[in-house]
Amino acid sequence: MATHKKSTPPTPGDSYVQSFARGLQVIRSFSAGAPRRTLSEVAAASGLTRAGARRILLTLQTLGYVDCDGKHFALTPRILDLGFAYLSSMPIWNRAEPVMEALVQQVQESCSAAVLDATDIVYVMRVPTHKIMRISLGVGSRLPAYCTSMGRLLLADLDDDEVRARLEASTLEALTRHTLTDIDALFAKVLQARRQRWCLVNQELEEGLVSIAAPIVDRAGRMVAALNISGQANRTSAKVMQETMLPALLAAAAEISRLL
Image 1 (cartoon, rainbow, N blue to C red):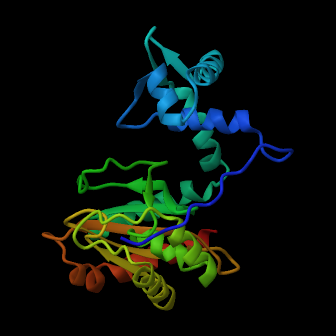
Image 2: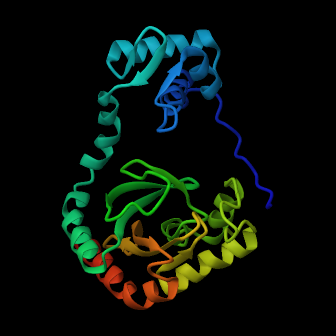
């Protein structure tokens, strides 16, 4: 297992509002695996005292972002306003969706788009076909960059020092028997993705899952997102995916880039 450094957390000051940061920690304590939590569970998950977590939860409840049945707290649909503010500020994804749907029809595999956020990728658009993963993915879902095709490709757009810094800041876990966790080996894969301008990951995120990604770039040639298709290895091998689907994926990514 590779060793990795953690960045020093920011401290309160003129440019850092600790109470706001704690509010975000409370919101992030809810997930698909824990949609309803008690006060004690929220406090433990967010690293806060019960009193601190209670103040934040009651504030969120007053604002309509959290509901409570007397014991358990849960997020309300209003929380979606926070995420969709980002998507609505980037209308490109509305125009990209038909391109992605056409690609799914052509290759008969799921298609997704994601952006890089620190050491993770965040899904901003997804057009599924079959359920191919144990993980339930949708807009806003996060996955580690180091073991995903879109993540490695997005890392490739950074300079070498930044790539290494993000890999070192990642929690490098062997999610399958194929997962690379050595930083030098991962760095080499990122460099390969940079050279060839696409990236294939074979069963490193989940056993049986193969994915291939292509870049979405702006007018200046900067990579703003990545597009991928994913499939099951027992149905479509990595070799077949590269040979038969990569050209269509590259063409779709180029079309979305043109829309930018």
